[in-house]
Figure 1 (cartoon, rainbow, N blue to C red):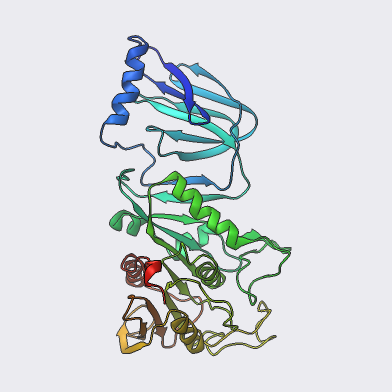
Figure 2 (cartoon, rainbow, N blue to C red):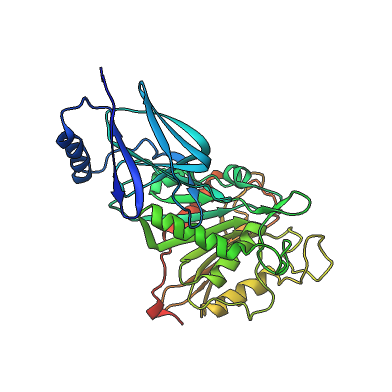
Length: 385
């Protein structure tokens, strides 16, 4: 049975952290040996892999803290609202929660804690089982639709099983509330609430990606944005604004700008999934839909626009080749592919015959969607059109 808990505090870069272990005291050298032995060993489970963690998005300041040991617990306190992070290797930091007082149960392994300013837009982030900080992992940003939230999107397009299967990290951010308490993304000019006086969600989501890259070992050639409806529109916006980072996007029921002046600088893979019975399938004019504030292209024109952006001139069609929807019998989906032979860029439409906006997509569809992303790494900028 562990009889005493001990701590060391030291400077790690510019951040003061406190390290704690439940080992009996054998002298200060043993405490340092525990730290050095851990850092020098192969990665071990932190207890945060296979779970949702929080990312504190933005430049957070370190906060002053007090700590005391109470039996087998560490009590950390701050005078102001703070964000607690945990690490066991001083490389990977896992966001725990925000508050002013934190009670942590200690075990025999060295753990490091730090308190930082709690920033307003934190993001639920899933780290797969057996995460290894020495290995680079793909990253997916999963965006909800208009009036949705992270929890709704996580249920409609769950990625956890696939993250453990394929080994990737994903973030499920929340859009901000509008005046009627409906969450939305400031995406394209059509939807939803996309005015210049609203928050810059494009910059914010880039910050989400950059924070994830600082927190975990992210494969810079496999960063993706996916989304439903307004979240799909936001994914197109990310492809346009941040083509230096984004390898590909998956858009379900969304659409991009009608004006082709909005184009990416570098190639971005596109997978677009759309039902033929959706109200925006044939395009819209101003006033056609209550939450659209600008015209939108038809799905056909949208795909031609993105094929042109990416110089994907080779076309192929596989009619009735996929079964994506539970309520529709047989292979209801036709695949239209536009391919750039020179650099390998793909622009692809999965057109669901008879599909509606909020559709009963199968588990198989979600597996295919994730596999598609993993099979489309970033195209080298040297191979850009």
